[in-house]
Picture 1 (cartoon, rainbow, N blue to C red):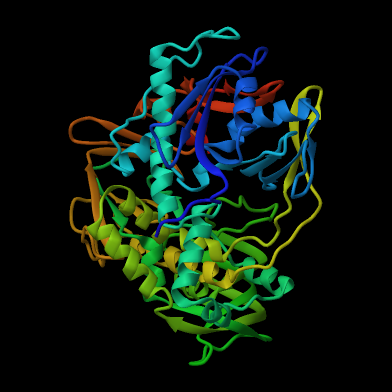
Picture 2: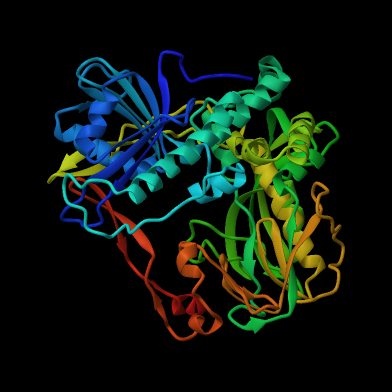
Length: 559
């Protein structure tokens, strides 16, 4: 499928190189590469020359992390009198699509001469680093490096090494985007692309029949049962050095439960009291008021959010006072197996019709491409397989943030409330529930050796085959042996270090860049070591600088 974004617009990829001094924050270099002819690259050394380039032609310009580069654009245009409008900007106006969480999707500017530029975030299309894009798409180019902190005065003349670095970065993203756009992936995000692919496959009429738009109040109740993946460091071994063992990952966890599970469709019906599962309505989402005590030898799996009495990120062993929560029948069955539950009341339920195989054609198609193709098409297949389920649960509250200038610095303020129709939240609710269920049951089957789980992976303290799991490198839903380890330390959810037989270390700590995490060893968890290199964006006059805020590791063990 050959498609191009608006034949009247050029499609380009750009990148800024910026100073790191908060008192001298500016663009010292930029590059622009044509998506359709990556031999066409232009370079400049100031934001002014970049803006002049933009006013030459109507264009869609992608930045890989618009939240960073876009602040320099907003700083410039707002200081030059451009006015923010909700949509359809006229000359001298601009509009933005920025979420309430500060995620940038687009900035659209109508320049004084009538030329239109839409800046988009390629990170929403290619959710990986530039380095990983080059690897995943089997590109000849590789991500380079330069001295980011070196002082470069206004009007700095780019060196050959700097030119090569910038050209490389924009070319990598442009080549990958071209593959996506040629496959008809024209939406702002890969999730939206995947939803369109699925709708086109089954037909819009069938999609509307299966997944009708539900009223917002009903959607809001259903959404209360929506939860993420299961990530847990077992309390028996948390904070201790353990091993040896093995790590396993599920082959395409979410696509596998989408393939195998009975999933909701059509309009639900409301029932009071305790819901009864029937052949016509085999699924439900219910509100229950309960207390619970974890059974001996079982893994905790209930988190209580929004309560002053519980830490919302921890899985509770004891819930002695009544709490009220929404859950699916999948969750409830699991909770009753792991806890002694005293359900004080059923507060009503939404019952759903169920169907197996809704996504099978879609998954078969992209799974076959993933198996038979390499490079860009294989990466696109993986993105489509993993991005669809979340789109069903898109929040209908799309209240965004609006930029404003204060003391010469761009800030973001919450705009007027805005809502859109939901997709079909119950689908996302049940897919994630089945996924948690599969991971938790796999961990429980290996309770004696279980160390750690993260959504679709397990670490076990044994070199024997895992109990009750199908181990295969390729079978959909089977567990792939990812690696064996000599020693490991699991500090908490999303914070661990493993050591291999060759003594090499692998550390993953959420929020800590890989460039810093590679230097973390076992002793560092206990000695209060402070690492530098954790960068946090700070908005200043001119744009954004990245400040090194440091990272103290001993806080992990103390939690």
